Length: 212
Image (cartoon, rainbow, N blue to C red; front, top):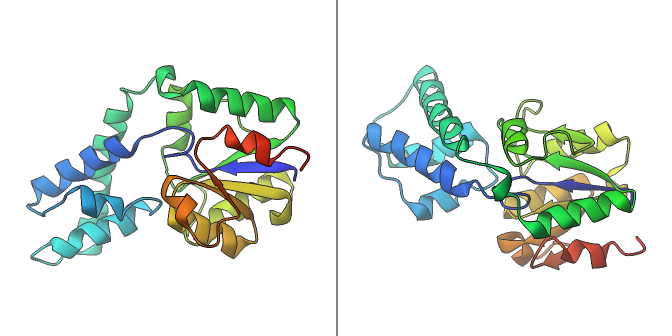
């Protein structure tokens, strides 16, 4: 094992609440019902795919241009909310784990569907930390398609068999399996029947990767 590829939201930091608030504000403006249960279906899903899920509750039809405008509105709200983030949003457990993996010589990358990955990393003090960032700005297919992880591996010059994917979403584990990666699941992802390792906190990776 030469590399570790991390999902961002729910693994390195937690921005779920900001996503929820942004989608909620957008949905309220167009009179579409949206709650935490629906929001849970959006985890690990691209922006446009998330919008399609939300619009299942809409009474009318929206053109592609209107959908794109709604997605941009949500993102503008979300980006503004991200300004609230700071280094305090990086937990000690995550920070220590990343630093130890770096000391052990592992290549480290982010594999996230978010188009705001670089901004989030900068806000939490990890702007220049990772060896590669594969995110929503350089992929065309979101999870469960493995493209985001395959691109990260390519950037690191490793094969899928040489990299471990760390995920908190079921769709992320599906993507890892489809791409030929071993996986470590935290939170909901730990319940996936095909996950390779189940972890409760990020530092559990240090034991898993001992000697690998």
